[in-house]
Image 1 (cartoon, rainbow, N blue to C red):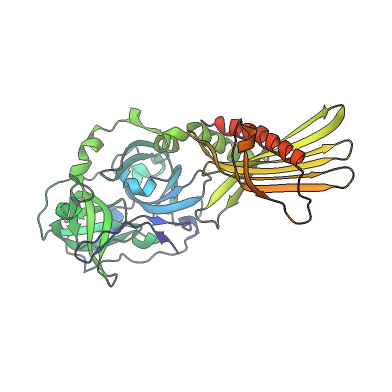
Image 2 (cartoon, rainbow, N blue to C red; image 1 turned 180 degrees about the vertical axis):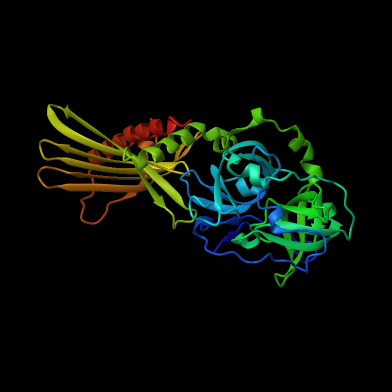
Length: 432
């Protein structure tokens, strides 16, 4: 079940819904059947068939940095080298993507061909279009790619067809309708200057980035947003007109394409590269990455551990310290020290990193077991790093089965927290 990413505005009791689907879709490699073309009315005598589009229109699966699917939409290939256009809102949270074509892959025994999207050249959030590149499109281009013409010419009443994957359908759908109005007046309040075309050709979540065509198969726009009445019945679809992006498409060249994830998230470059390496290393057991696919949103934690031996005041110790990083720039460390005299200290510290403000939303736990059996512990969700040691610890509690720390032990805990804050901050800072 997909959660809809929605933007709701009140215009004559209508509801507007952006048409990407968010969630963890089943990738089409697992599909075992396909269904006939779905149309809102019978297809006209003009030859509009699914086979016209299967090499150009694809289902777009967007992944987070942990290689987990987070949303689906539709894309349209407009260049034989695999250049495609879709909506910006489909890919905005993504770090990589796949293009799923309804073309049999006999080598893998699948009804679908899955290709990689690793490059991007343009992202216009305001006009809601994105241009990327399918890296290995050459595998199908010679046999299936077709050249389509874009147009800005249309009239109210003209026949239209929406082509895409409404409701994240398994198969490509074509829906017939008519142009009902130019929606610019409705959208002036939210997207001044962006031209939308209104059509009764059915679209739904998953259609975002698909195409709206006329009866001559010319591209009128990108299907973007659906308008529903109070009973949740489809009323009209809004497509970003070709007028908004045709100049960008015509000026696109191969030198403009950049790494997909780094292009969309330029301020996270070091973090992205580190996380990618950690996930790659995890596949060869060089690090540990745990996928939490059932979490909302799905996420991944990558960890690595350092071992150290040394001595304090001529007492030997063994330190094991693990660092953990999540996709949302949160992280932490777990530390355990065992001294040769029998003392033991455990620390668990976590927080979310901000380039401007350091580590926020911190949680800190420390326990200390003395060789004589005395056990102290302290946990705080209200603790701050400060060079003024008196301002470090605000409130805390002592877990059951542990003794409350003395004033001298509280001072030690404050100093230990400050030390570990700097250690964790430096770990985060490698991504700044």
